[in-house]
Image (cartoon, rainbow, N blue to C red):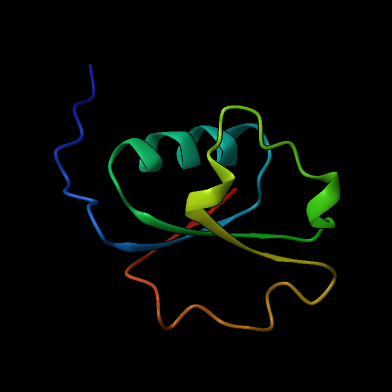
Amino acid sequence: MIVITKDFKDKKVAVIGLGIEGSSVVRFLQDKDAQITIFDRKKESELDFKGIDKSKIKTVCGEKYLSRGFKEFDIQTFF
């Protein structure tokens, strides 16, 4: 069994890709009170936010979704 003890509260986390794995990570991080920004090539209207509280996340979407960079984030995850 893997136990994660990292404190994610108020950490700025970039989740790159909201596929199956990305969605799971976002739901996990929301339970840990992280500040989440989702980056995805798809338009926001095409993303599946099932089980995700959209009011507590930011999104960066579209073809140039990676051009913003990630320096402001404490943690970056790629899926």
